[in-house]
Image 1 (cartoon, rainbow, N blue to C red):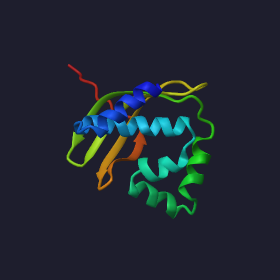
Image 2 (tube, rainbow, N blue to C red):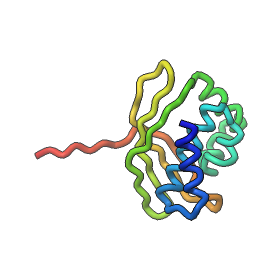
Image 3 (cartoon, one colour):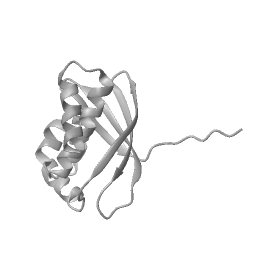
Length: 131
């Protein structure tokens, strides 16, 4: 997984397209969780709007991440479809961790002056075609 994260990170630094940049940010997110690098999550990964919501709760970001992610071990993530619409993006992912069942997640990102940042995580909306 580290090799995959490194490759995606290199692509983002070499004039890659926005889809590669979004994938690199999602990879950085998982790498920071795996390494319990809450500082990186708070300073390089999460969107300012999300940080503002955390601050409104009265808990510093580093501490909030430690509390919410302390039970996550050996996280894995596979990025599927990435959709970009102006300064917003959505990555549909398959996520999992040791002792947890895999799940599809939607990671929403916004483009800031500092690049793409994660603004929210949620279950993806999957539409079914009926005929």
